[in-house]
Every structure is written in structure tokens, then in C-alpha cells.
Amino acid sequence: MADDKRGRDKKADDEERRQRERELEEARDRANEPEPEPVDDETGEELGDLDEAIENQDYPTTTDELIEAHGDREVETQEGWKSIDEVLAPIDNERYDSADDVRNRIQGLIHRG
Image (cartoon, rainbow, N blue to C red; front, top):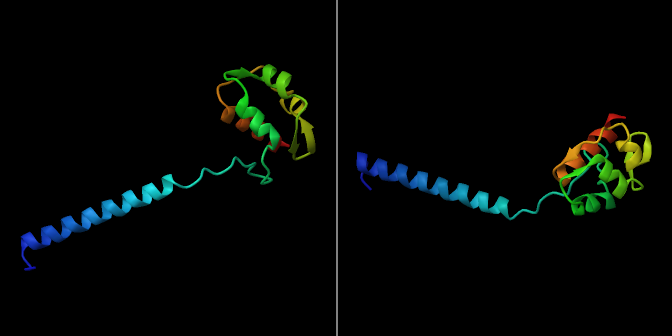
């Protein structure tokens, strides 16, 4: 290919097209990766069977409803094992719109120590 403006433009266009194709391929590869499991950041432990129970809870829900449904389940805190009733006891009756809201609240409380 001659080293003229048209040749340089075509070469630049081809490189841009290849770059877009690489980015699309990388995005497709990332989309196929499995989602990471929810993990308790400080201890590396999951919330155990409570995690599944939280996922199956009807939302929106409240702190009182969570305690009524799952208050006897235990999670590991910085001070040892505590029931959800004990963990949520200092919380007023808050509203939660999703399992992630509940999970984040519980994890925040068990890490406060």
C-alpha cells in the first residue's frame, strides 16, 4: 500500500476497527464470567444459610419482620456468634427494599464490633 494520505487513513481506520473488536470481545468474555458469591469482607465468611433466607424474603420488608422470620439464626461477628435478633436489636424498624439492603446492613453491624 502506498504511503499516501488515503493509505494512512485506511490503516488508522483498520486499527480503530480492530480495537473496537477487541473491546467487544473482552466485554463478551466478562459477561460470561460467573458472579462472585457474596462474601463478608473482613472475615471472608459468607452469611451462611442466612444468605439464602434473605434472598427468599419478601421485599420490601422491615427490621421487625426480619427479626420475626430469622431472629434465631446466627452470624459470626467480631465478638463471636450472635443471633440476628441480637445483631438487629439496636436498629429502629427500618425498611429494606432488597436482599442486598439487608445484607449490607447486617454486615455493617457485625463489623462495627
